[in-house]
Amino acid sequence: MRSLITVLLTLALLGCQAEATPPATLFDYRLLDDQGRPVSLAEAAGRLDRADVIMVGELHGHAGVHRFQAELLAQLLTRPRPLALAMEQFSRDRQTEVNAYLAGELGEDAFIERADAWPGYRRDYRPLVELAKAAGIPVLAANAPRAIVRCIGHEGPDYLNRLPASHRGWVAERLTLDNDAYKARFMASRFHGQAPTDHQFAAQTSWDDTMAESIARYLERHPGHRVMLTVGRFHIDEGLGTAQRLARRNPNLSIALIYPVLPGETAPPGWTLRVQALPTPRLKGEPLPKINMSTPECR
Image (cartoon, rainbow, N blue to C red; front, side, top):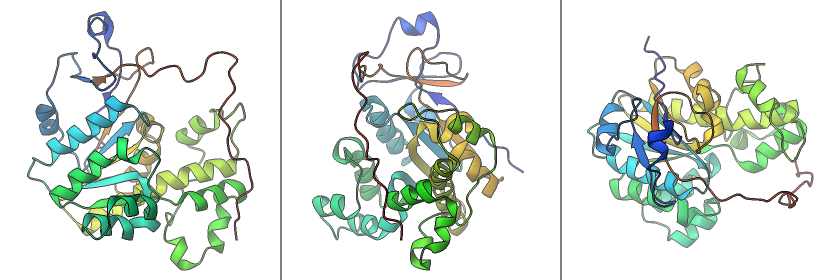
């Protein structure tokens, strides 16, 4: 049985010497190996050749991270092993629209609207999709639809039993609801000062299980291929979340994790991709952003 490979390519601070030469702009990054030595993307792509799945954690909206994702994908496309791009940023119910755009059957405006692309698509994810389109590789709309996830968070996992078969297939067949380390991390978090509920954890893991299942099914149908996943960093922190749920579905897969950490945060040992810190979102005393607390329509 092949072990779960943890290749931690992190956005982090590694010692005083590294701190003395930070990236020049928010668009820049510096890739270092586990000894703090600079490594080219071409060399990194070669070292990742054994990985069946490369999960690239991200800080949503960070220009340096998104640039790294695109440039890493470009390097992986030069390797001989067939590759697919899986994305948290599209859900399974929009796979037809993703496929249509890749086939040249939709313009970008229609694609963004019909595929329900994330805000900032043109800035953050367009380079990835255009690389995949030009290379002729699949893009997996790997995630669960947000409307269904909201209803799971409001009514619990039993809500899935009320979905018609066509909609039920948009979420993982099996949700991981165990009291595991990932649940402990999630339940210890705070959202607008409030502790999460069991229903909200079920919603959270519906994302992780669906992405993991999407990748596992693709690799079952395409032996010898590999997948690069773009996903928020919490979903792969410490090898939990999506990574853990994929490993449980197929323990034989080699999974490489690329985990971003900003300067000043504690980073696990391993490879390092350093970028500048983002601006402070709110000063002390400024209000939190408004959120939609309305009850979803869950029929």
